[in-house]
Image 1 (cartoon, rainbow, N blue to C red):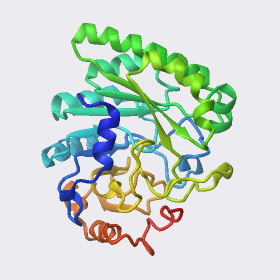
Image 2: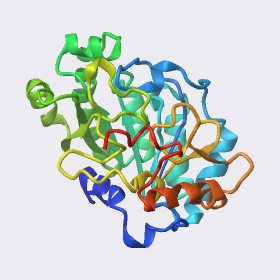
Image 3: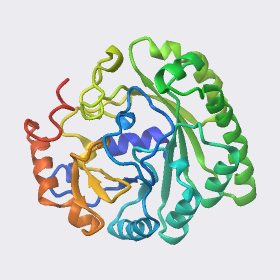
Length: 314
């Protein structure tokens, strides 16, 4: 099975046949089970509460997942902008995606604070293929400063427990969920600050990698005096050009209330390209609004589009 960085690089590197205004069905989709989060990270616009909070209706989820799989989606992320471990039916959603819909790869990213062993056991047993912990602080003090919550020690303990629970479930069921971690480089010194924390994490995960600091569609640009990269350029070590942005071409993003978004960071709804409560997935993927935005990206001129602020730092 490809590693997480190989999968990330495959999605962020837009194949030639996807560099069109009406690309094929995206190989990957992230769907937001909940827009709620237990942290208030300075680098994330979720804490600004720019939209209503809520959970995806089970009826909508169970309608969309088979439709997207039939259209050709292969990789399903059961998260988007919220923390999915706050969603009560997470393990049931994983089971539905794997057993009923037949997704080859179901993945999840978590901040780790709610990743208690009993919750993870249920997710692993349901067939989760990949769990990534987003660890963006070097110690307890920085964690509190970054997230406004005291949770560093809990996260580190949960990562350690996750490895044991994963291995136990693998022995019992024969299914092994991959465990990963990523960290954001806020500045040129954060990698060194993180060295001790990463050393603690590495025995319990299969891979760790770094991400650049994103400006989240311009909403968090300049926070704490930081300077983000332009757009979403992938991971450190394999960063892409900001235009055209892969997010419009190779990965779908569905909000908890059923909007198909063009952006990884659509905190205020300006990137909605279709309403999946009434439109089909592929109809929204090929909507006139979406195709016009892709055309602007292919022309490398997003002035006057919702993407303008995100690319302002290029």
